Amino acid sequence: MSAAHEHADRSDEFLEQAFREALLAAGVLTQQSVDERVEFMYSRNPALGARVVARAWVDPGFKTRLLADGSAAVRELGIEVGALKLVVVENTAEAHNVIVCTLCSCYPRMLLGLPPEWYKSAPYRSRVVAQPREVLAEFGTHISNDRAVRVHDSTADMRYLVLPMRPEGTEGLTEAELQTLVTRDGMIGTVKL
Amino acid sequence: MSARFSPGDAVRVAERESAGHVRTPRYIRGKRGTVERVCGRFGNPEELAYGRAGAAVTLYRVRFAQSDVWPHYRGAARDTIDVELYEHWLEKA
Image 1 (tube, each protein chain N blue to C red):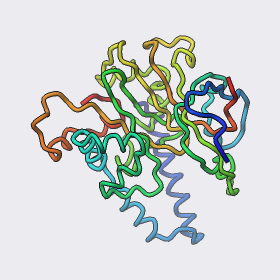
Image 2 (image 1 turned 60 degrees about the vertical axis):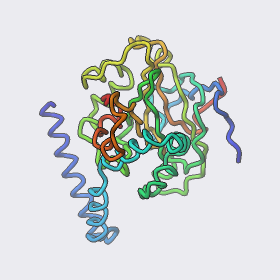
Image 3 (image 1 turned 90 degrees about the horizontal axis):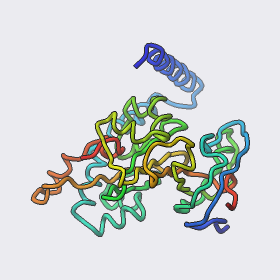
């Protein structure tokens, strides 16, 4: 990562801090509401997404409902997702899916927590839409030309989660054991499990 | 109000300049694709961003062949990109 990019990140931090302090001073936000929101977001992490994926692997009915209406299916598991409009896209022998937000950094935070820095970076956002196979290869993910690569640009109100293919040789594992195999990047689609 | 387009419909993204908070990426303007699904109705972000009420507009997921989006696309012919687009950015193709 270039020095210029790191500098830009620091500028963003200063801007966020100044803006937050101004909103607190104006009484638009309270410190308590900020703390509660931060605590809530830190309670979100990829283990939630992994629960969803592992359930879909072991329960075909759940998988069908998940692909039809992601948010409703996730709520079945008792996971609170607020106003999230979730679209789940399934990796198959015919297609591999990968998620991006070219306009900003939209991300299924309710299920994966905060996005990694690279997901928010200009190089990923601008390149994965136009050269997805090259970008995936940089993550060590090689997709043969007989499988389609489907890019999903989160431009508006939907958020996306990739349902990875269940790894071979995992038939004997329990749902809890399967959860441990599901990675954040697998659910973004930049890696295969 | 019913959706103007249905899954499978061929559509073209309007090719126009725009100022402000617009959620239609430039790379997709003027491109032809196929409606993948109707997502529902949402407040227009082009109004919401400025504190206005934001009239509800229908949102679609539109699927484009990558080779139609990027003239020198080097991937496979079946590769696609899906973009969420509001109805007022779509025309019949």
